[in-house]
Image 1 (cartoon, rainbow, N blue to C red):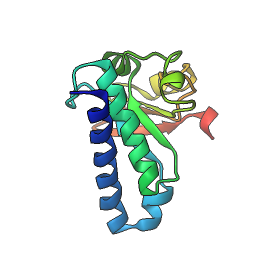
Image 2 (tube, rainbow, N blue to C red):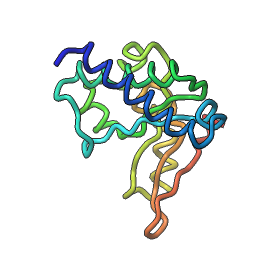
Image 3 (cartoon, one colour):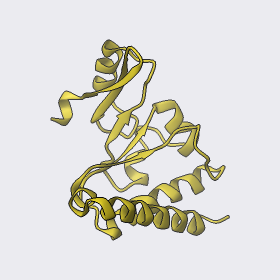
Image 4 (cartoon, rainbow, N blue to C red):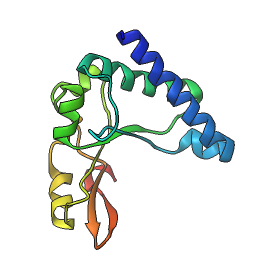
Amino acid sequence: MTSACSYLYGEQRAAHAYRVVAALDVGAAKIAPWWLDVELTASWAGTYQLNIAALQGFIAGLRNAGATGSIGIYSTSAQWKDITGLTAQTTPTAFNGRLPGWVAGTEATLAKAKQNCTSGGFTGVAPTLAQYRIGPLDADLRCPASR
């Protein structure tokens, strides 16, 4: 597999996802935020380069399909690094600037979510959202810096 193939895969999957949402609500597909789930439980190409190319393709595919809302990453620092090899310092270069982050954490408390909001964020910018648990449910805290 090549980076071009991974990029094309991401681009085509994103276009498909956009079409599915647009079939239900064109306006929402266009302006809603899109979050890419970057977790170890998903299948990945096996190398940082191929994984980054697939994510870059996914972002381009959403934009080319008509998405104008923000596109961000749902992950943790550890998973982001394991899958892409990137850190908060290197992510902006790989993705041409600002890439919003949503800090995953289904084991986190509200206090931990607040702490995650004030971290530097795994994408190099302050997180937009931080996940935590309320009993059996997942909840999300909108981080103050993103308001």
